[in-house]
Length: 335
Image (cartoon, rainbow, N blue to C red; front, side, top):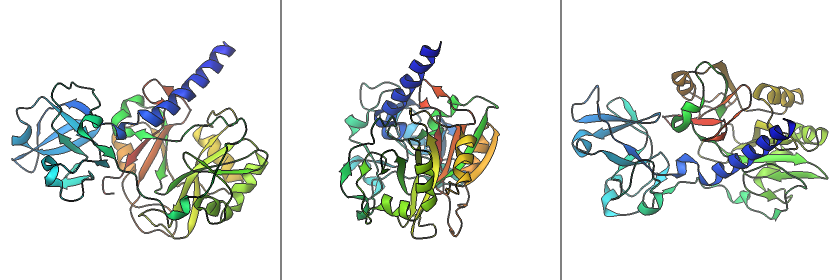
């Protein structure tokens, strides 16, 4: 049984890594079934529900159609005549039509495609990646010796909300908009972005965040081999928060790549005064309540704007065949 547990742990860690790289739903354009529902405030509009997303469409455009290709928010469509209605900016965003948020866009499914197909390549639709400051460059170095972590990526709650069980206790934190980061100490201090380990440089964004957060370095040196994952934020993205270059932790991993349970990891970090992303709530799982907690203003001190969204995970770490590690994000519809 012990060997089976070890096998499952590493199998799911590899599975989670693979899904984060090539299977993230926000990077796919999937063919979905079409079912029109009346719009409560407009006779010419209808609502189509795709997983946990709601879309508002012109009824006449889809009333005789069985399937369509769903483009989630932040999809970028090619500059083709059929998408001229989007104007010069072909990035898909959430919009409100007669009081109902429309989360994404439906386009005609390619001929011969079927439900479940990823047609992003055929339609030449890509995923928007927000630009980062020049200070995110710099030299890359080798990973820490025996490092077992993987690329940190979180899939969409509205796509995979069914992986949570009704009434399961979940832990919700604010999703801060910045640059993903990771820090660990082995033979020396290591500092990384989502995909790279950065050689020490005072001009580099991630090293600046470490310098501005001395308790983070103290924590890493005390618990050699643990990896702190977090967000570098401030003068980084379009949500500026309270300025400067700041850090907030959102996850903690052991030497073998396994994750601390949500409360356990946060409590350990807070013992060393490592700043963490704002805590929103701990509740029995409920779809509507999770979506509600993604809305509203940020809880980051000194900031005065909306929150980007929230992150939800089970109170006790677990894995699921469809998503690997169970942790999902909800983007604020107003963002």
